[in-house]
Image 1 (cartoon, rainbow, N blue to C red):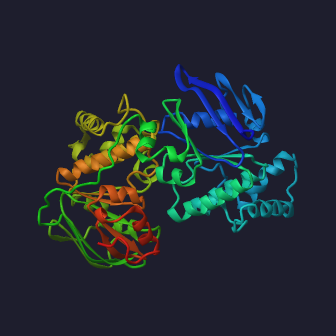
Image 2 (tube, rainbow, N blue to C red; image 1 turned 45 degrees about the horizontal axis):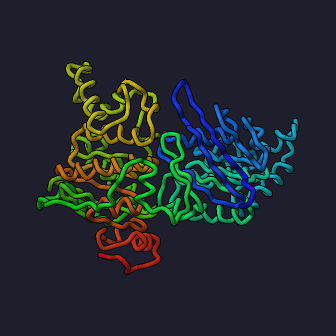
Image 3 (tube, rainbow, N blue to C red; image 1 turned 120 degrees about the vertical axis):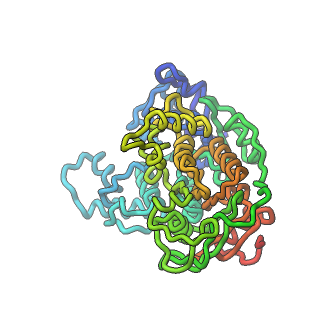
Length: 502
């Protein structure tokens, strides 16, 4: 066996009596792509911070490049070749690409004067390492998420990195951007740089990883090769639960649609979109970024007004004047980004749940606090939101529980049609399964549900019909029971025009 780049031995860590890590062992070899998997709260982030010197372990050692440490500082970890790319990438959005790339080198050299020619040379050398084509004078805040990530990777390689830790690197990336990232990771591997790939996305980790370490409740429960796992055993290790991989079965449907679009058009976004949705259905709408799927959702929810076509709710034509009118018309919408569009993070869980129904909780101009508290408690209970107190702030919860708050907010309005845009983005496997179960139960109770997602397993397993959008048009209607994940992916990317069609 070759010498390890990193060897974590018997590491434990607690915070205020809460055991975050217990006797963790982890080895990573040069050029290895190693997946660290676990649900939110499993201890992944704590372990990363111990390895990178942010936290001192209570017990155990960290060996980097053959040197054993009982504790590290972040500066020592970087000097030893450890680089961490966090989910927010830790870039300066108000500085240019060139400034972001050159700043660390300049500070390390203790230079007091700026030499812009030297800055540009440093930045050019950094992006060349991964063949990254970008305008060095562009503000980083104006870049796409994928390009911000490539800036962070370029910067990491400037420090002679031997191990790059990528913390949930694909959360906000499209499939095309994920493929591009994986090509870069494989190139880094070929150069002998080890990657610790931290994720809970099954399809991605099986595609890229060579070995797995899975942790649950702060303990390593498995270290194994990809061929020793399948989707079911991977999920069992992560959650301690056994989930069946069953497809959604629609019940008997009433004849009248809950929602119907006829030749709906928003100029520049989508055109001539027609479909119907009946109570009890879960309709999937999928397509690549830019296909028009999100704009369609926003139009159904009254945020955009169609330029042509017709929208019908329960058989009656409607022209929503705005979002409030759509809510009054029985439409609910769980947005794509819960953090910026779905939640008031500093406000309480209860406030977030009742905000969309607040008008119904006001009597003679005063908020009925008793009814508000009762409503919040009902949804916390029904959706199993993990909190000891609904008065706690929403930002105290995990991603999965935050998503349940957003779901509760719209269910509290008692919608006839619920539209969910990326309903499980950034949530762990256990929460993802639970959210899917909630959606199936809602459909079973007669609600009409639309899932808009590019997560192919999500739409295949949880929808009775799937509409495929390309360039602003619906190009296919697919029966998910007759198509494989690979076939649907091919249809999305245009690699096949016939496979898997209904």
